[in-house]
Image (cartoon, rainbow, N blue to C red):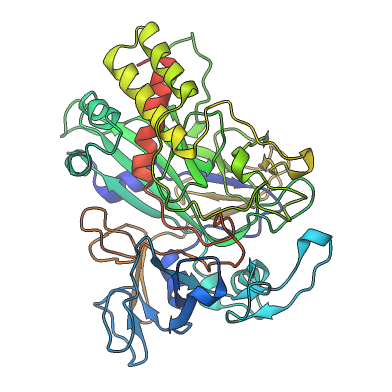
Length: 496
């Protein structure tokens, strides 16, 4: 008998190692949603005058239509007279959630003037999401929100079985990614198991000391495992593992077309030869050890410090992040693809010369098109001063551990660490259901990929004077698609 969804989820639950300075743990996204207000935004998205609402006040959003609600509450997907629809998302209009308001500060000149801003007031005063208030709501034992405190140490799991993957790839076969159906056909009854990690806020600055530069509320991460089996009636075996993190130019990552600040790195679960030295997950049974970068929540298969180069030349910050780019910038959040440039076409030729065949050429093509979606080649670097370098990802190291979240079935020995078992389960609290298993039809806060329904807005507030949406809440990315794009790039570079 094949394993059930729940059995697979428990079998591959990750072990997360957090830095001692980390203040946000993965939490239940539904309970976050229920405490938020909902706002509307139109182009230009980073101007306060383009925001309106709130469409729903704090604490009035309900995620599941089958649950009992009060008259003043709104289901996420319902239409109410005189209230605009809460799940609108178009190139010119979107929705965003707000848990804790904004803060007024100016890190550009070294001074910080703390002031809580509960509603949009001006472009100068709504530049930064109030992450410290989010911290208080989740972590302050005396003044925080008990429901949010109790929602921590939580993941959301989703299984894409063979038929579902085939349908998704057939639905959009020609989005300049010919590698994906080809790659899928070479797999043996594949299934992709995704663990989504929702972090209430994201801390990301520059090495010069600007801690606000790319910090925001509403952060998503993902660990994914590609499973295969010779016989659908047998148990699955892990073949590949993917972990999300910040975009890093010059690496083999998979990107989301709209949420481009996050990317996916994919590696083989086990080394296939002694020729290539590959980073593999350390495991206890089938539980991968994942090291979480402090603040940014980049997921890594090894501990230590990891450097990043996320800035293209047109988006290189200047003067310690006081300016977002060398030139006045436009909002790039909905730009389309561009024609591959010379650096990318060199990789196409290399794929053929290396004898990788159609799979290698197609993989390189997919890689080329996605890289040039940014308008730069693989070797592009920023042009700003060294003071505007992105902060590295820093993870916990053995002997210097913070909290470690682990499967309840494991008994760990980690000296100095605070050991916390996963709380993810299926529970009912005050007549509201909370589940760690994703059901996109019933749980409308997830985007529905085939019907274009569900919530496609931002999981944190828009911020003003933010042309690259660096400080805006994240949209939920298409992690499954990012995984296969990164996997194709890895095969093109290292062989089938």
